[in-house]
Image 1 (cartoon, rainbow, N blue to C red):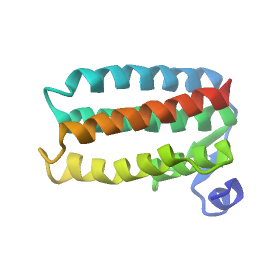
Image 2 (cartoon, rainbow, N blue to C red):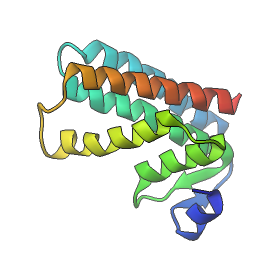
Image 3 (cartoon, helix red, strand yellow):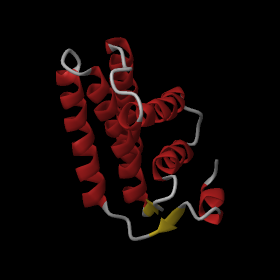
Length: 139
């Protein structure tokens, strides 16, 4: 997916780059990863959901730093696609984050208690990799 297509589809809009917002999102992602790790043995569903949010924040940080914002429709998927575009290469971590995004919807809105500790650990690992890729890209 390229940026031009995201713009033509109305999924992103240009705005002034905001390094402060990007930094805040990266900091939030770090905090979310710590929280998810702490919840692993208590509530794997929430650990999973919070780990996903860490990955999402890394994607949104990249958008803010580059001067883009995801429109509200399909915002999460768009943010993941944007980071994939920004990195300029396929990313197994981003593909995995998109899979986690889909399960997170089920966990949050439909079926609580459906996440194993192993799945939550994987979500933490994936989001940690996404955060690392975003940080590397932004420095």
